Length: 64
Image (cartoon, rainbow, N blue to C red; front, side, top):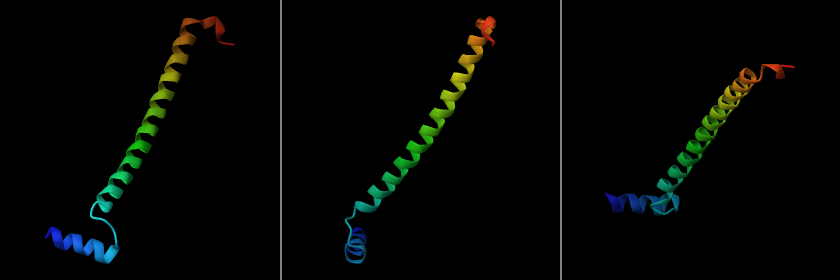
């Protein structure tokens, strides 16, 4: 079975046995990185808004 897969990949697609799993992992890593970046930005914006509200409550004379 493995030899058939090895032969199929080498003769049909001219690629190494580990190329396809490596490409799949690379794509998954890019997707995970994008999702993590988006979540971090959301968290950062929420924190900045919360911090600004806390500062405004602490210093009400700065509401100009």
